[in-house]
Amino acid sequence: MRILLVEDDKAIVATLGDLLREEGYDVTCASTQDSALAALEADRFDLALLDVGLPQGNGFAVCAAARSSAPDMPVIFLTASDDEYSTVAGLDMGAVDYIAKPFRPRELLSRIRAALRARQGAASSVTLGDVTVDPATGTVRKGGAELFLSALEYRLLLFFAQHKGRLVTREMLRDAIWDTAGEYVSDNSLNVYIKRLREKVEADPAEPQLIVTVRGLGYRVEG
Image 1 (cartoon, rainbow, N blue to C red):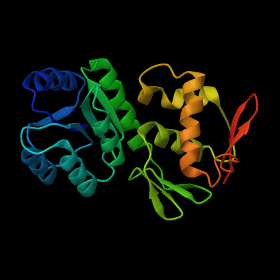
Image 2 (image 1 turned 180 degrees about the vertical axis):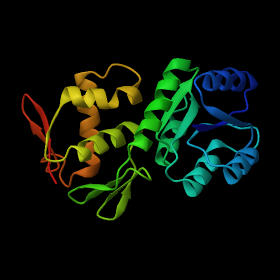
Image 3 (image 1 turned 30 degrees about the vertical axis):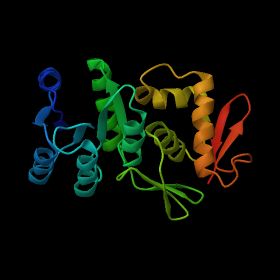
Image 4 (image 1 turned 120 degrees about the vertical axis):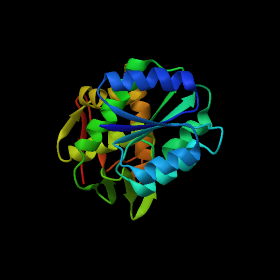
């Protein structure tokens, strides 16, 4: 597995580069926008780790180029812990996940493995009513118009779509989003995630027709 690490902090590059290589990954490092774009043009990668702030250019431009040249390649942003704008902007651009600095190395490895598993296990497009999920590109469309979901919302929707017509328990959902959340997912948090997802995919979130609650058991996915 080949990983492109775009980061200008030499200490992070050294530490993270060594960690990834110890895990068996082939790592290419770039410290500027231009060098990252050159790497994307010259080689194919299985995953990209992008810092938002670079001394020349920024990670958003690199993400856009990556989505254009390799739409099925997962992108994970490395962001400052208080930089909410960068986090949202990165997810809206198609990144599959983000992790705040300073990060725990083992948590980052877990996020990387989850992103690679999702890519390897991606199937053809699946639908729920007028909502189409394309795992190959990480895009979601409703009535032909693209929807912009957070990494957690996308992961939930994909899990629902892959279990269409079946009962989905809350335990199954917690297991499905554990790697992305990076911590235990409480019942209240899960309620919030599903409420937000319904607001984006349902015609009437107050009367859901795609993700239907089965009281005491979980959800039944229609479509």
